[in-house]
Image 1 (tube, chains in turn green, cyan):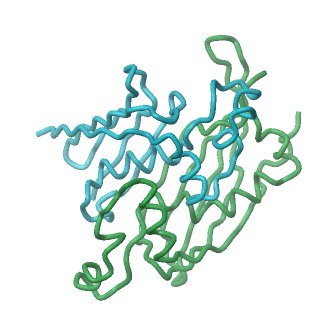
Image 2 (image 1 turned 90 degrees about the horizontal axis):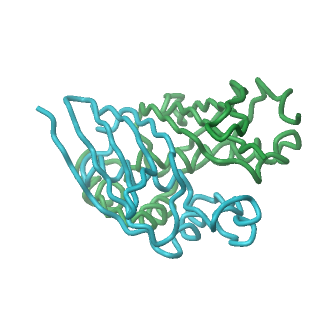
Image 3 (image 1 turned 60 degrees about the vertical axis):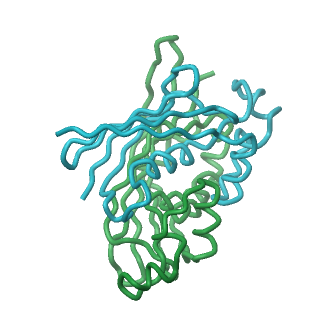
Length: 149
Length: 116
């Protein structure tokens, strides 16, 4: 089956966080938290740039994951791909202007049989994201499930 | 003492398209009805990451986002456009457990978080 030999493969990307992109993202979520949208409010806190929401990790990790989705070994599986679980651990806050480097590594690959007897394949992808000062901002664990036929 | 919190969100008809635009997650199961149906779904579904983001919004609740230390969620059932989601969380010290249900009482997400 395709995908068996991609354990340990690593994908990388850089992502520059912009205030405009953060505003677009929180607009979709209808989230008007001033930490994300109000430059003056955030400046009054510590003089810095607006913050990105913690789950903006999905955005800055996406380019690295896209390299995985377009990997010829994996792309055939994408039509049956479902996001099963997601875990993030947040460290240094991410702010507009930051440049985030993300590593995504395929860590595990196993099968699971559901109650209906369908065999799903599970891929666990670990992400590590650091900022321009080499500080850890986020680690993630993506559990992707390939639905059985 | 445990603290309970509830909030509601209606998933807009076009939210998967808006979220796709903002996140660049253009997986066709989120934006193409025919493709979604051909792949065993009843129609386009919302990106799980969007449901997770709405869950984090419920937890942070207009406060300092740095309070969210960790979040771990399991996507239980697809969220469809026009669903009405109810977010219920229980906070006990730094530990939070959260359940998200749709208008039919079906669980779409369950998760745990820790706060700083």
